[in-house]
Image 1 (cartoon, protein in one colour):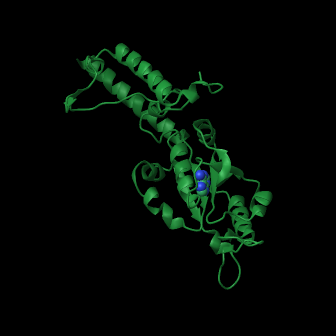
Image 2 (spheres, helix red, strand yellow; image 1 turned 120 degrees about the horizontal axis):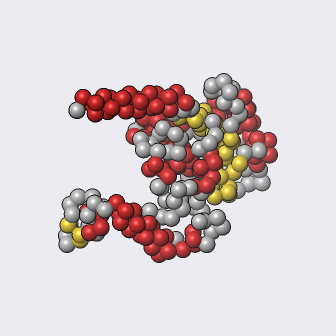
Image 3 (cartoon, protein in one colour; image 1 turned 30 degrees about the horizontal axis):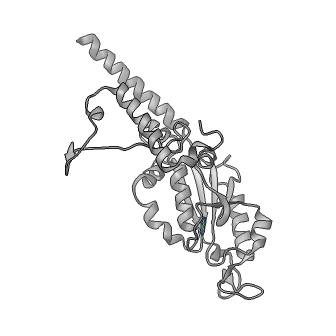
Length: 264
Ligand code: ADE
């Protein structure tokens, strides 16, 4: 009894010191978001996983309003398009100085200039592989457009990577930027309690299949029963069942994924 207790205590203190080492080895992923509407992010940044990741210093999100860099009495950040047409275009002479100044100031020594992404429906479509690549960065800068988008010279001068989150048009890049932060931060070491859980996500490196079904109590609801295999406690069988269900679901819902190069 005595010796088993001390073994447990030793294991516990080893566990604690490993966690401490891991924590000190973790570094912060810095996001810089450029937007005309920084308030859109308020709710998102003050709840749940993202808040806890910020509180623990695993990610940091700074917001910059490029209107603050516009000159002139009215602080105009947008103007009518040359050649006519509907809507407004965001002005190159406030976006470029804003991004250049912020990019040149490191949020922490050694972080560098980071990856500059411009959110637009015309960009390369985001997928989990790109998310995984971004999660290895120390700093990501997200440029959110509005209205008819940015003056073309913003891209010519700043040379951002242009990113779309899907083939539909949002009112601006802010919701897309939140999607990027959300997808990337969950891969930052330490953000999810159990590191394994992000590996099991659909599309991720450990599993490019869609996830199969999940169940919780009650065992029967309106005549629908939880599959027997999940309640019999045989974990080998459960793993096998889950793998089969993931394949079935992918075949049924997203057969296109199976023929993607490098899927397996
Ligand atoms: N801005 C507007 N629509 C967008 C989209 N689909 N992806 C990224 N940014 C956008």
